[in-house]
Image: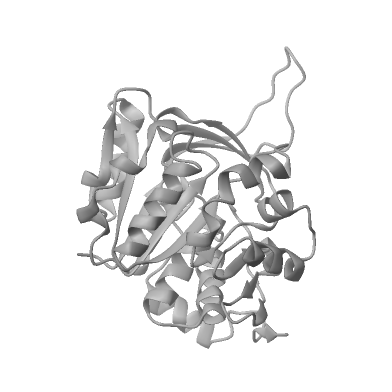
Length: 321
């Protein structure tokens, strides 16, 4: 039994580049490259962990269509057991990713079978003897979000696992909509790892320390807040706050950066690192990922990430407060 289980969304990513603007109705613009890649939070995290050499299992849903076959094949290619992909009668999820020349991206997502993933897709045997269980992709799983995620986290904790939760950004959703889904779950989350825009949307706050404190007031055991180019902000179970600077790299493709961070965070926690050091590893894995096109293609073995960190890959020491 592998230490880490990741449960959540899958998607086939169709990445078009460069796209720096959109045509007016009836208009036409061209781009120069189109790539099909595996994606979705849970799949990305599991593959990034496999590339690090930290084995993990994944549970997600996909259809019997071409995108579903592609996703299963990509998992198997990277050494992730594809038997955790539950067969769905509907279409597989996919995301059209518009990648700009700056490396930033915009997403058009078809939810498909992600909306039918449910807590019942995760048998008790899949939770047994896990050290870490992450739900990746909250806010994009209609049947799972809210009560289903809460029940799953309860079961994971009862089985002895440490729990983590990550979300996706739903543009325009008011704070009440975020909290309707997440507030019942946070008291069962040992480490909550949202992005800054997600956390701002759900709390109405802008400053990382205030956000992290509020999320822990809502029940999260600790917070690893992803700050994009600024790194990460951590607040541990004892209330200690640490800003972990980002690693300076040339951005080629930021697709999957947050998922690579989560993979590094999980790898660090699995190795027994304290939260700020696990987040520093998460920053480094994310930095490696965005140096190449694709969500996870740039992730090297963990030993290489550690060598780069030892050589000064990080922007500086973690800053406690």
